[in-house]
Amino acid sequence: MKREYPTRPIVGVGGVVIHRRRALLIRRGREPLKGEWSIPGGVVELGEELAKAARRELKEETGLEVEPLAVIAVFDRIQRVRRRVKYHYVIVDYVCRLKRGRLRPASDVVDARWVRREDLHRYHLNPLALSVIMRSLEFFKKGK
Image (cartoon, rainbow, N blue to C red):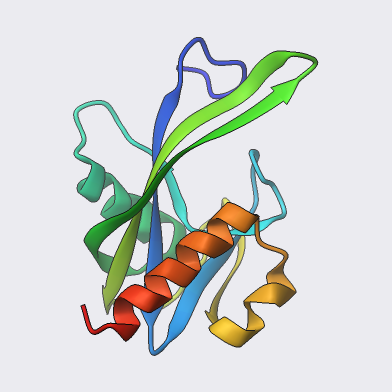
């Protein structure tokens, strides 16, 4: 299915990885959100379970192996251009624990960083992404 001007919503997953009280952010190298800082993730493949898709996407984009712990958010991301839907994703975000690996941004990721809570404002995150990251930090703070 084509991603631009789709005929139906596309299912995507994201992974908020928290490690040592820092959240993993990536700077996207492709549309949608090209050049913006965000949560790593991507599209679910046919026949793939959501948690497995999250693990695969994070490995592909960052080189890290993660364990999805819980669904932290489910939402729509719809972008319209002249009354037409250019992008429509239904996104399931997981809070994740780092298992192993070294941070190595993939070709579709311009940069990747571990960011402290107090520095998140510097990355001009989408308000929804920031909210999901803050909830994930609280999830770990409560010792889950």
